[in-house]
Each structure stands twice: as C-alpha cells, then as structure tokens.
Image 1 (cartoon, rainbow, N blue to C red):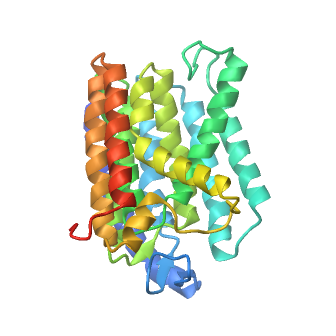
Image 2: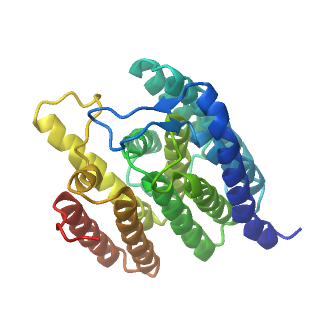
Length: 335
C-alpha cells in the first residue's frame, strides 16, 4: 500500500475508532463513578461522565504507530518513545481522574516523558535553529513543551474546546508537513484531527462525556510534539501561530492570577473562554468562535510558509487579540 493511500486512510480510521471507543467507554466510566459534578468553579450545570480521552487515544495512538514508519520523517525510535510516554501519562492521568493525585508526581512524570523524547532527537535537530547551544536548545524546548502540556489541560474547561483545538493543530501541522513532504507528520497531523473529530461527536455541547486528564495531558504531549517538529524542520512561525489562541488565553490568565496573588494550582473560571460562558454564551458558541480563530491561524500559517513569517505573526497577534477581547467582553446580543 502506498504511503499516500495510508495517509488518506489514517484520519478515517482514527475518526471511526475514536467515535466508537468513546461511545463504548461511557457506560464503563459511569460504572467506575468517574463523574464530573457541578461545583462553584464549574462551567457545566449537570453531572457528566469524564475520562473520554480513553476513546480519543484509542483512535489516535494506533494511527500514530502506522504513521511512525512512513518515509520522510524522524527515526521511528523517537516516535516509539513518544507513544510510550503518551501511554504512561494517560495511565497516570486516568488514576488522577479517578482519585486526585498530588501535583508533584504528575509533573515529575511529565518531565520524564518530555526528557525521554527529546533525548532521542539527533544532535542536529534544534528547535531554535542554532541560536542556542544544543543542550540549552533542548532544555528551553522541554520547558516550553512542559508548559504546553499543562496549559492544554488548563484550557479544557467547556464542551468542545479541546477537540476543536487538537483538530486545528493536527490540520495545520499536516498542511505544513505536506508542503515540506514529510509523510510522518502529515499522517500524524491528520490522524490527530480525525481522532479529535470522532471525540467531538460526543463532546459537543451539550456534552455526553468529558475528556478528563487522561485525554488532555497526552493530547498536550502529542500536539506539542507536532509543533516542536515544525520548529525543528524550520517552520518556526507556524509552530507559534497554530496554538497561539490557547497559548495566549492560558498564559495571560496565569499572569493575571499571579499578579492578584491567587493560588494558581486551584480550579478557577477566569479564562477568557470561561468568562464568555459566564456572560451568557453557550459552550458551542464559544467553541465555534475558537474554531473560527483557528481557521484564520491555519491560513496565517500558510502565509508564513510562503515566506511572510513576520507578516503572518503580526496577523496572528491581531486575530488572537481581537478574539480574546471579544470573549472577555461579549456583546449581549452575540449569537
């Protein structure tokens, strides 16, 4: 079977597996009493099963195993380490979903996962394009990746939003990889988009199941990897542009909470997207706005790949800034 045919089949297979596995997981998770019940910091009004990331990963990880052996990408050992790391983080996060674990072992596991994958990279694979010595390059890249894993978890607070974000990152990285001819990343990006879409069928508002840490933490790991690969391959501007809504919302919210002296590890409802829900928008209305923003960011990534990196970055700042302003102060008549 040709590589091109495999690439085209991967998103279809990952969509179908994610769709079916997520539906099958619902009663099992319910019997395990993995239920998110509304609280003062919740953005939902009724109990919902959590842990649906199990279904999404069931669609995603097998497709990435296939993609890892396609030509034109990095060594399969790197992808094997990445997939093992995703599995380990999913297992730890599943335990956290069942019974909250202390933050220290969870962060330690993420640090080990990131370090293990970066240690597999060839010496010449530098995220910052030679601006830093190799050790400093991988150290800074690891810290950025660790932050991305956690911000992906922080941002998973309303129906549909993380599925939309994962699908957009998958499609955006697949486009960049297509232009570069790196089949592995095309396959991985499309598989991520397919698995996210399958999960979204059940997670779209009103959600029948939530992602849970078992989904959001591994999704942050694999999405962050695709963005790092873009930067290593020279597409540093798309690597910044594609996740810029999530990066901006999470980072600005964290900075404001730190400035107010709040305990940043505690649950809250002060993200821009959460404030939009509090102001009266439905979850699906907010998720659609995020999706629209991501479509524009994908287009700007294409502009950057055409050699207009600074123009595209400026456009991304403008697009994300306008969206954050709109979500932070939504008009009463918004629909």
